[in-house]
Length: 139
Image (cartoon, rainbow, N blue to C red; front, top):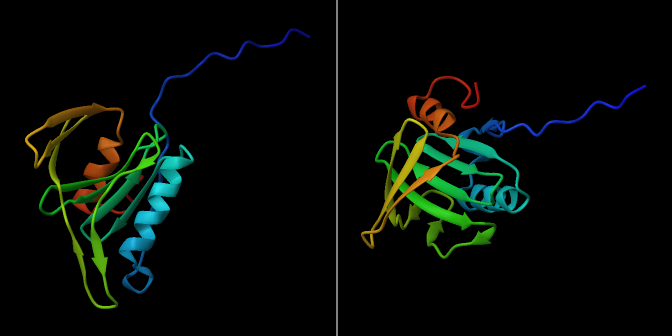
């Protein structure tokens, strides 16, 4: 019997969505989780109210505030980036360093330094779904 050739498929990674209740919320816990997934090249998306955490197969991880279009890069190419997040049992504070917008399949980041980057291959469709709060972010 002849062996079938495997053809390389190019497609976006399937995002594994998660939603957590307020009792399960820990910003720093989710940050560590999504960075770990990025380092494992595991694409994930987690929504906590108006916050979206996502990782990519290329090792990037981000935290987004979908209400105010704020962005914080947590990891790039698997390397944890410097950031400041303060969390207590009743509140948290995030030092955002960029704004973002999505145009089609383009994820556009405007950093506070003035640098603007356009990134392709991010789960823009899933981010927009989570942003609209429609059901499960991975639907």
